[in-house]
Image (cartoon, rainbow, N blue to C red; front, side, top):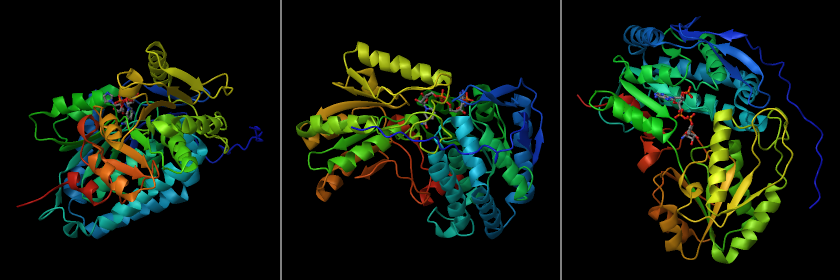
Length: 479
Ligand code: NDP
């Protein structure tokens, strides 16, 4: 197939005003943390972007106290309609500053600008718009009698969708009348800190949103703080289990959105070219750093060779490189640690006997990169079929009957998402009923909308985010 050469189309970084160092955002102001500062680097160049303060236990305590005061004095007393006005204001500012956020997200995270520009930032704004609309209608949202906030919410988010995960967490918490202490991931704190500026710009009352930066220990300090009423966490199943253990026996409520190992299931009657696009989007979107990624392709045996052939041809056209180039399809792996994890799991795939293929593209000389990779001949016991790789790596398995597809798809400790490709509506409904997955996409994949609930079964966690269901964990009901 002819290769098209694309001239570089770099997005300008002039729209971003990076500070050399950032403090914590507590009680409406930026303050220095008392821990050692750490560096946030660009994963595509390994260049230092900024120094960021680390929050100690005492800093987390100050943030929780500020959130408590804001909750009791201001936010819990404000009408829903007035809270909604602040959320609408934040949403509009996110839209106005969308380009700045998109460039900063791609710099700090390594994701392609076309994704941060067209997916992450618009969806983040949409979550604020959507939840703003609920703020004065909570009594009509079927949440139960007399819905009211918990108080101070602690939120810990990962590095794969930094601003978007922030919006999934903060928008419903504020709409329901809670105040927030949020920790972004150590490798991607910069858009959360820019969001803190948005809170100032929106005149949000001080203490309603507090952002504390740091690594796992700062997250643990939030989890353990006695002043936290509810926790919301997105990240690995390992850390999710630790959080569940730490809060057992306390009055803290929690929602956990953890890992996944989704099956993307292609039947022989599926429109193959569309399915191939869906498979590519399912596993290579955001470098595969997606909890609901379609990382296990289950393809019906009769079309397996054809699907794999067309899939490899399509993957051959994917462009890997500079995240700020508008033509880039796959950006940088978020960190050296994540790259090492991907390498270790793909080596295990080879040594366990699966056949490895990648698109052979050139990779930049600095930064963290991984070629889009496909493993065929994968069996259910292989680690690459069981463990979350969280990278641009697809494992291909085959099946003969719908029953076998269901059995294989459900053969995982996870249960976050699944995809079905077939022309038969009845089969879609039957499969969706059998699959133990929180989200099931039919003839599409990785579609997100703030009105739609998202969350998992089994080791993918508990609680839902998004939609009316996403408000539930943020309220108490009854007398
Ligand atoms: P983590 O679960 O460690 O990170 C998620 C968030 O939790 C980060 O903010 C992290 O801080 C914080 N954290 C870490 N330890 C603790 C703790 N003891 N108490 C409270 N908070 C804590 O994920 P990793 O970055 O280590 O990624 C490892 C694997 O997890 C990936 O390979 C992937 O398989 C999976 N993952 C799944 C995600 C999902 O969306 N389901 C998202 C991210 C990862 P910090 O990063 O600053 O250390």
